[in-house]
Amino acid sequence: MNYSQLIQQLNQGNLAQVYLILGDQEYLSGRIKDAFVKIIPDNERSMNIGNYDMEDTTISAAVEDAISVPFFGERRLVMINRPYFLTGMRTKSKLDQNIDDFLEYLKHPEESTVMVIFAPYDKLDSRKKVTKALKKVATTIEIGSLRENEIKKLVTDKIAAAGFKIDHDALDRMVELTGGKLTAMMSDLPKLILYNNDTKVIDLASVNGLVSKSMEQNVFDLVNSVLAKNPKQSMDIYHQLILENDEPIRINAVLIQQFRLLLQVMILQKHGYSQGNLASTLKVHPYRVKLAMQTIRKFNYDQLREAYIGLVDTERQMKSTQRPPELLFELFVLKFMKSVS
Image 1 (cartoon, rainbow, N blue to C red):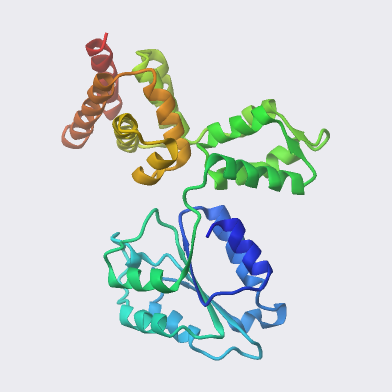
Image 2 (tube, one colour; image 1 turned 90 degrees about the horizontal axis):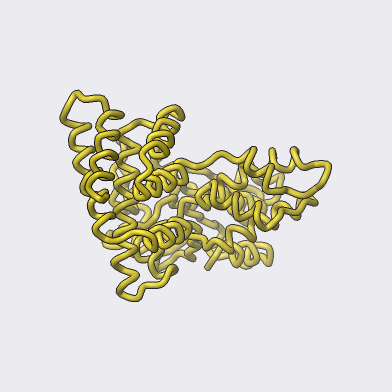
C-alpha cells in the first residue's frame, strides 16, 4: 500500500489493527501521524493516544498501553517510533527491550487499538523473528522510495492548495537542487510562496535564489567536475562544502559512496536493469539512480574505478596520517586527472 491509498482508507474509516510505516520520509511521516490522530475525537485524544520512542522507552510500555481499554471512547491509538530492534543497526540506547511482549501482542492484537509503527529505515532485518511476525500481521506502507513523478505531484498539490502554481522548469530545478528529497522541498515552499505572493506563480528565478543545494547535489556536481578533469571547479565545490561545515572525512566518504553507486549502476545496467529496478535493487533514492545514469553515459568503467580506488586510498591516509585532509583531496584530484589524461 502507498501513502495515497492509506490516506484514502483512513478517510473512509477502514482501519486495520496494526500498521507498519516503512521509510525515512519525515514529511510524509508527519502527514500520516496527523491522519491517524484524526481518527480519535478531539475530546478523547489526551487519554487515548500514546506516543513511544523505542530509543527512550521500552516496547513493553507501548504494549501495556495498547492492551488497555479506551477511556470514554471506542478506540486507542498507539504510535511506536524508531523500532531499532527490527533492524540490524546498533543504538546507544541501553534499554532492555522485552521483544517477547511485542511478539505476544502481535499474535492477538487488541481490537479497540490501532497500533502504528514508524520505522524510518531503508530496510528491516527480515531474518529476525520479530520482523517476520510484524510483517505477517501489519498493513505495510512504504514511503521511503518515491518516484520522481510522485514527489512532483505531492509538491504541486501542496502548492495548488495554497492557491499557487509552479512553472515546470522551476519544479525540475527544485528537484535537482534538493536531490529529490520531499521533506526538503516541502520545507522550502513557505519562503517560495511568500516571495511569489504577488504573482501566485513560483518561477525558476525564485527557486534558484531561495532553494539551497543539498550536500548530495553538491557531491554530484563535484563528481562530475572531477571526472571532467576540471581541477579549479572541483576545488571550488570542495571548499564550498567545507565552508558549509561538512567534515573532509565525511565528504570523502560520500564521494566514495557516489562512485561506488556509479560503478554498480554501470554494471547492472549492462545486465538489463531498468531505472526502477536499479533503485529497488540498490536500495537508493530513485533520483540518485537517475543522476547516476546520466553520468555514466559520459565516462567509462576504468575512469570510475580509478577514481573510486583513489578516494579509498585518500580515506585511508586521512585516518592514518597527520597531513591536512584538504591537501590529501587536492593530491587525489591532481593524481586522478593526470592518470586519465
